[in-house]
Each structure stands twice: as C-alpha cells, then as structure tokens.
Amino acid sequence: MSQLPPEKKRQASLLATMKAVFWSFLGIRKRSDYEQDAAQLNPVHVIIAALIGALIFIVSLVLIVRYVVAK
Image (cartoon, rainbow, N blue to C red; front, side, top):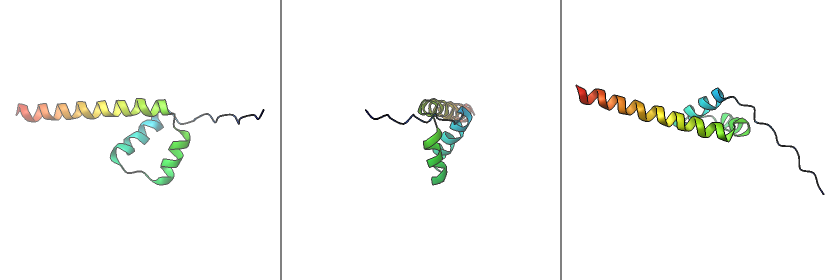
C-alpha cells in the first residue's frame, strides 16, 4: 500500500483570517496574497470570520438607518 503524504497544518492566525476576509469583502486582493491565503487559512476560521464580518456590516447598516430615520 502506498503511504499518503502528511497533511500540512494551516498556520494562519484568526487575526490574519479576519484581515483576509475584510479585504475579500472589499473585493481588492492581490493574486499572490490570495494564493498564500488559500494555502494557509483554516476554512473554519474563514467561515467564522465571514459570519462576524457580515454581522458587523448588518448591525452598522441598521444603526445608520435608525440614526437617519430618527432625524
């Protein structure tokens, strides 16, 4: 039987993941950075960071709308 190569452990921190997701929300990211992120980011961290980012975005919009409507 052939041995499978050991999986590489993903090394990026949660902060690096948040940064990558933030730049992805804006849609501006260098290809080299994208390839580096794909190799290092943990998919679970990406999902968590995206949910947190979306929640912050939605709450910000709601607060802005409430402020504008209150005037």
